[in-house]
Image (cartoon, rainbow, N blue to C red; front, side, top):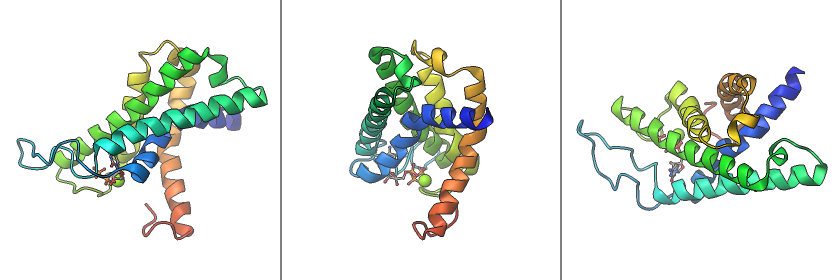
Length: 180
Ligand code: CTP
Ligand code: MG
């Protein structure tokens, strides 16, 4: 079933989706690039990438994943809970870490193209974190048991669509100034 496949894919991606939201909540303080410029004279990453956001984002993703594991156990579902806890933990920690790493890589690329902090750069904003999260997590033993090719394809197709629709809904609810 298509809807079931979509729901399963989104569920599997929650540990990669949530870190940036937690980073927004807890971020601030010292920027990862310590305010320094790259050889092109522009900031390496910019003030939007901080140590607190990076670490807090990973912690947030791990927290969300553990909630998911608990919910699955309580409801008798077996997606993440089909893995032993250690394998589940390694996989979701790497998804969260990879998401924050990819988020920083996205900022590095944006700065090289001259985009200011906070400017929107469509494909990079929506897929850099996902590709790096999947790449980093693929080194865990649990990854290939759950992230089959059909899940990976759905992830790449769904993520930009989710990004656009969530932002549009937030705009309609007056939570955001602009619909992107
Ligand atoms: N944030 C942070 N540390 C991170 C990632 C995010 O502190 N490693 C916080 C920052 O306050 C940032 C906000 O979360 O402004 C939103 O994150 P994001 O959209 O990724 O950053 P932008 O400010 O849009 O900067 P950029 O143009 O570099 O993406
Ligand atoms: Mg941004």
